[in-house]
Amino acid sequence: MVAVPFSIPKDTVSNQTTRVVTAPASQRPDPVETKVEQEQGRTRLSTRDVVGAYVALTKPRVIELLLVTTLPVMFLASRGVPKLGLAIATMLGGLFAAASANVFNCVIDVDIDEKMRRTRRRPLPRHQVPRRSALIYGIVLGVVATIILGFGTNWLSAGLALIANLFYVFVYSMLLKRRTWQNTIWGGIAGCFPPLIGWTAVTGGVRWEPVVLFLIVFWWTPPHTWALSFRYREDYKIAGVPMLPVVKEAPEVAVQILVYTVMTVATSLLLWPVAHMGWVYLVVAVVSGAVFIVEAVQLLRRARVGLRGALLKPMRLFHWSNTYLSLLFLAIAVDPLIHP
Image 1 (tube, rainbow, N blue to C red):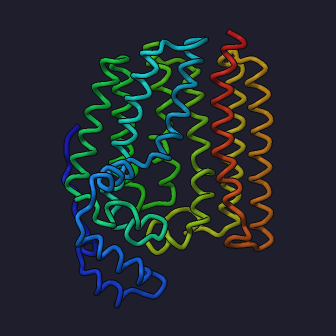
Image 2: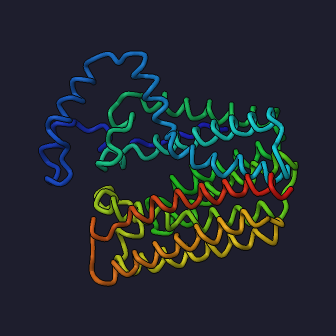
Image 3: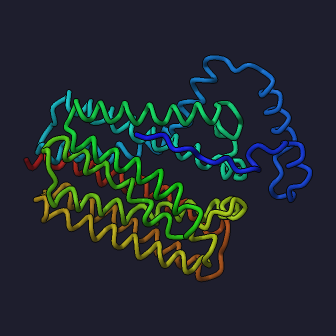
C-alpha cells in the first residue's frame, strides 16, 4: 500500500475559540463540552485512553457488519463447516482490512467529522490521535491484512481485500462523498467485497454464487445508508456532504429506498436456485424480505403525508435493515448444514 499525502483543510487547524465565536449558533459546540475537550488537550492521555482512541478509529461497529457477510459465505462455499484455521485467517485478515479502510476514512474526513454532532467526538476531531499517526496506523493495518490473507488463505482473497480498501479510500472517500448524492450507491461497492473474499478463501475462485451475494449487499447499502442519513440530515447539510436526503425531498428519497429494497429482496431470492439453497434459506429470505419491503412502504407513506424529522421514523427501517442482513446471512450459514 502506498502512502498518499492528504491536504489538511484550513478550518481543521484554525483556532477553536475563533470558531465558536464566528460560527452560526446551530454549528457551535456545547460550551461545557468544548471546555472539557480543551482541558483534555492539556492533560496527558492514559495508555487506556490512547488504545481506546486507536480502536475507535477503526469503527468497530462497521467492521462487525462486514464480517457478518464473510463467515457465513465460507459455510456456503464449503457446503458445511469451513476449516478452523482458514476461517480464523479470513476473519482476522478481513478485520484488519476493514479497520485500515475505516482509519483512512477518519483521516480524510476529519474536517467533516468536526462539524457533525454525530462524529465530532471521534478521536481525530478531539485531537486524541495525531493525524499523521493515524495515517501510518491505517497503512500498517492494510499491510498486515494483505499478509494475513495472502499467506493464510490465498493471494486472490488478499488482492480482493486490497482492491476494496483502495476503492473505499480513493473512489468513495476522496472522489465521490463530497461531490454527488450517488456517493452511497457507487461507494458502497467497497462493502460488497466481503462475500467474494469469504468465497475465494475457500474455493480459490469466483462463481455465480458470490456474485449474487455481492449484488445483495450492493442493493442493500443505499436504503440502509439513506435511512440513517434522514436521521442526520442537518448534520450532513452543515458539513456540506450531498447525501440524498440533503439534496432531495423526503418522498423522492423514500421512493428510491423502496426501489433498492425491492431489488435487495429480489436478488436474495435469486440466490435460492443459483446456489441450490434449501427451505431454511428460502423461508428466511421471504419472511425477512417481506418485512423489509413493508418498512420501506411505510416510510414512503409517512413521507408522502408530509411527516418529517422524528415523525418520519427512518431509524425503524435502518435498524431493520441491519437485522435483515444478519438474518439472511445467518440462514446462508445454517442452510448448508441442513441441506449439504
